[in-house]
Image 1 (cartoon, rainbow, N blue to C red):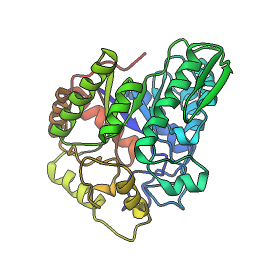
Image 2: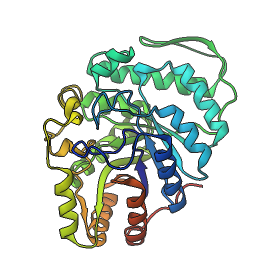
Image 3: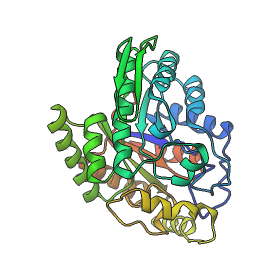
Length: 346
């Protein structure tokens, strides 16, 4: 098991708490990234959203690829897993970006290819937003062009969504980035098994996660002869000295205010995501189903749950917490010693 974190590009993670003391600024991200790097966290996921789905569409949020270069420049070991949505990017241009970033920080970039779910965002920013299953076909072509251009020059491709002719991307990276992707529909999982190396999950119960790990490994083995390289799961973590303290914090952050602007995207998320489980407004209060793993309690309780997820197949835990920097310190101090970890990448 490796520990990672989810970058608070939206000014926090909580839909019911307006001010979490983590404004959507570079200063916040830099503090969190350098704290994680110093404490031995392995990977920072930087989500890509042009509208803020936690604090409301009118609230500030930060752009993923600008942050990626900045975070890599101010850290030494931390891998950055940056989300990229095929409907908002040209794959050959993305390959050129990755070529340059790989020269800046060799071996420290991974991708999280996201099929997207927010139609309103696509409308505002001119993204290409086809029907659900087609978005995974679009993602497959996107990855094929991106990796093809990083492997060989010149590179040509003639697909339904993307076409390139004699594309030259130089310099070539010393290694290709690991490609994560997430999706829960049958069409999504089948496509991901074909174009991704690793699977990224929202929070789930242990049984849900175990089933997804087995399913993706089986699909990947059938397609390529190899299992998935990594399984990442997002989870909101509350660690306190007593269980009562942890439960009080949980109640504080999940007292639903239906008028909160952070719930503006709730209906679109559930309608456009083809989820395999129901999501309540209370659970949506922290997003990415981060409460579903129930990593809430004393250090011993939380560590025991994390070990169970490790045994179910999770290899990378992407921590959300609030405020994030001090909570990363608490988790490293109180939970890391209770969980057998793989060393962070060097």
